[in-house]
Length: 205
Image (cartoon, rainbow, N blue to C red):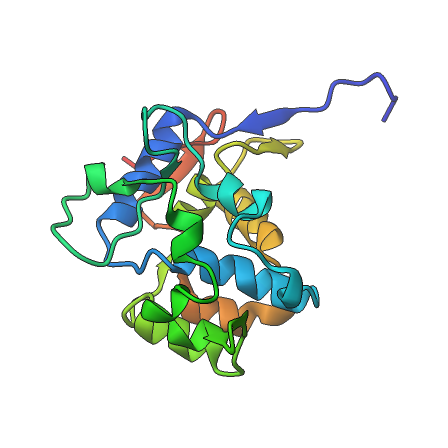
């Protein structure tokens, strides 16, 4: 391909991101699952000792403009009423990094910390499924559409749900050899949804 050739780049539309928020918001999910995904990736990279709840990599996943006092937004809640629509509780205050520090995270996920250090136990998949997803796999497409909302996709054809899931797997280090682990925590693309146009997710007719 010539160096000056245009590269087709797609981004997720607001409708796709809104769908992801509605989908995630309808399921009971422990908010610390975001931190788990980050710590697991750091562990695989051999960088768990350097992991920080204040890292730009982590906070970039949940940072959202639009609220005067709460800079973070993510539709993962394990308490209260779920309506399948955006809730005010999706907005999070500036103390989120403090809540996920090694000394504080033990209140919500004690198995992720030991001696004031982050740890990743051998049975972390079992624990995440039971204590963070409440034994119900979460939509990989919805997580991908939310956490990749600021990313671009370089594609040669029309974007698909599989492209978003592939991007999610790449972002959080789930290569093909982790298929069994991935299948335990994440459900595949919603059979009633599709991506059309510039990565727009909507109910299939």
